Length: 308
Image 1 (cartoon, rainbow, N blue to C red):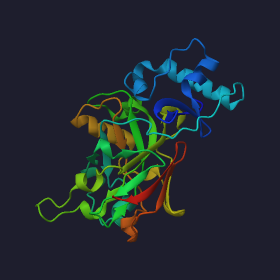
Image 2: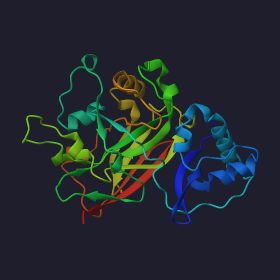
Image 3: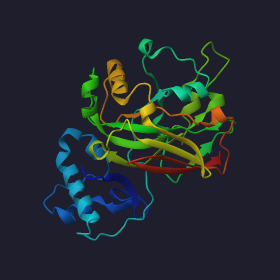
Image 4: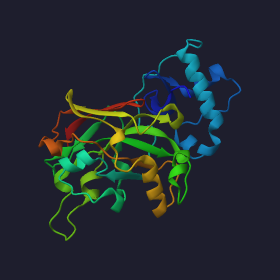
């Protein structure tokens, strides 16, 4: 499949519309499809319209791919859309895999059991933590150790329970980029016998920058061989490959679906590689700018601001 992305952009300053991404430029998806395939069905207003009926979306995806190719080859001329990007969609559930890279576990001082004796460790982030590219990550007054984590986000298209590893990729709609912001000093506590509090440390509003757009599964080569990078104020902090995952994408999907029924639109943040601030003794402060990038998908940029 020729590469294209699906964005959500703000038309006229306030109305969200589906955007077609071609070579990092946004075009109105409906206008693009109509220009190339006039008889094509109407494009949904946003990505949720596709995800909710993912198994029936082949014709729409084909129309979007044809429009993207026509634009890339100069066969049609359409105006660029300059409206602000929203998140590609608002996931109802965000599952996040912890300590899924050996080097990251080491830099965090995490003692892992042998892989053969363990399974993925997955927690949930609040859906209200999602925020788009170019928006602020709000630093709570209660933390002094705000940290970054670039991660490949897997978006489920076909739901299911007890999904076999060999069938897992058929359940993936596509991919996007997530930055799992973490308040390191709030993920630990001493007032209960439970030493970790992943919810408190990772679910503040704005703690999940997401985007800049969604890329369909078949537009990405091997998702287990993608370069992941994150910079802070232009300085490289993380630079690794998804090859380093301890539990791969298929294993994470199989594990999750052994516990619950996965639904269209569920998002899995698949873990972060080495290079986080905790391992360096370096943390974010107001005014810092993060850029999280994954090859074949794109980059999200977010700045840090103090809570009012």
